[in-house]
Amino acid sequence: MTSASIMLIRYLEDHSDEFLHNWLKDIVISESDIYKEEVLKNGVKMFQLVKRAIEKPLSEEEITALAHKTALERVNAKVNISEFVYNVNIGKSIIIKWVSNSGIELRELQPLIEDINALFDRFSYLAVRKYTEIKEKQLQEKELYIDQTHKERLTILGQMSSSFVHEFRNPLTSIIGFTKLLQNGYPDLPYLDIMQHELEQLNYRISQFLHVSRKDLIDSTREEIILTHHLEETIEFLYPSLLDGDVSIEFNCEDDIKVLANGDELRQVFLNLIMNSIDALQEVEGHRQINVCCSVKEGRTNLRIANNGPRIKEETIEAIFEPFYTTKDLGTGIGLYICKKLIEKHGGSISCQSDEEWTTFTIGIPVESNVAM
Image: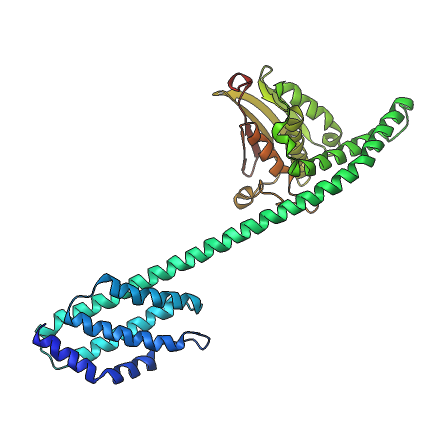
């Protein structure tokens, strides 16, 4: 240890009380800080580290121990890290000022000042890094808790809705059956066709809720399906809704596209996407158009259902396939979620693109020749 080091240590010890007094006078401490007393103790410990650093280089463990202790206290005190950094810089400035007035020749003093600066910089870095690590871990734990809570709520909601819908479906099935009997016995009775259509729509909505909670869908039967026939049947079923909404539909699909799928589940997807398009087009003045086209590319179908309705914002597109997310006043928020799950179950994918002219849902599922029977 040099004579300059010995002189400087003695000088700092003689003025330690003044240093700590000036530091406490200038630093920022929140009234609600539960570690106010520890702030002073940490300042004293840092002062001791400075004196020891002048004697000889400190180990990383010595600096890290105080830095991590301080960081944990700052987190628990719920104090912004900027206050901590400010207080450390105040301490460094005061010590450098005192050291500069020690009367030691500048040539001998300069290396010691550099060591003090390096100590404070290393201490700040280690403390801020630890503070950030703790905060990030807390955030991850909070997000995990929120996700788990959300899943539990979805499970409860699914069980409740499934129970309710099952009870609701029994009388609905009877009404649909008697309506069909009336149609057979009195084919000219007015409004029966409208009643039948609305009852089918209601039955379809109920099926959506059941799809959310039913586990037997995993083992549902699949068969070879000609995609064109399924789409044509869906459009024919929705013809009253297209007519009522003043919507034109253009259909262009290759005739021989075959997929191995569950017909009811694919029909559910097509119904949902086309009904959503009809609903969206009600906000359009003038010509309302839906285009349905399908082709095969690289062993996968390329089914596109597009409408010239309002543009969907980019941030909305990222959320529309999430459960219970809806932009409709009376929407359930499960339609597109079910579509996504059913398409993924068939080894496929569904996506949405939207601009000022068209909103397009694109479905890709393996064609029959590429799917193991």
